[in-house]
Length: 61
Image 1 (cartoon, helix red, strand yellow):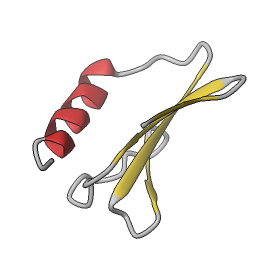
Image 2 (cartoon, one colour):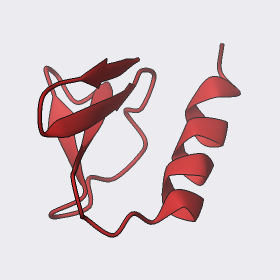
Image 3 (tube, one colour):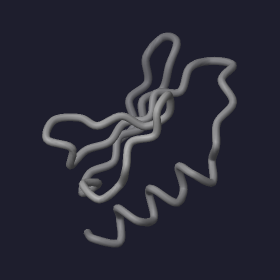
């Protein structure tokens, strides 16, 4: 799920219980089965990391 706000974009993935949080990049939500990356304007983004997380979590759907 992608949520756009005034100064950030939040990228949330589900079925992510086996994905470890990454400090400052990826945080756990709820019981840990959801993970969220908040991307703010001007922030460097590791697109390969996000793509890998999306690939890993979407393979379970």
